[in-house]
Length: 203
Image (cartoon, rainbow, N blue to C red; front, side):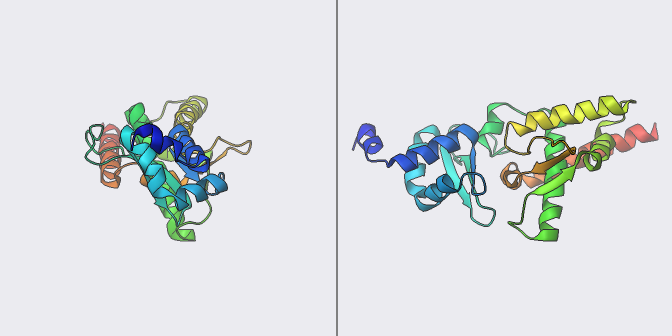
């Protein structure tokens, strides 16, 4: 069977769900319920379309999430560190990676308190700011520190990790963060930043 024949036999609903996955790297049941249900019902069909791109769809039923990973063992699976292809497309710098590690800690703590699959974690900026300052240092100006944090959050918003900061200076951490990267790598990164911050404080 040719690729053309396969495409011709792919239902339009599956094509729509796959296109959404490729565009954003994820499908959330809360925001795209019909497309999520399609992906959930036809995983083999979706993965058949994704296979030539070295991508695979995974389903997290508990959190209502369908997301893409780089197919393990594929030619694009270079080091296995960042599983999400949208993150791989543009490598994160250390500050972005650090913020992901902090946000992931907060999200896991939220799930431990409210249960896996509960509502997304809502975090005030003022709670996040001191955590970032602890690792990245004090810029000497509250306005500059706010700007640094908001710029980092804006960059991560493009990966579907966080929502936009609301008028009440709050943001939502999205469930994809638990599947974004190897937790051991994130813990090691936090430890490295913590050691560096301790050295700075001792000087």
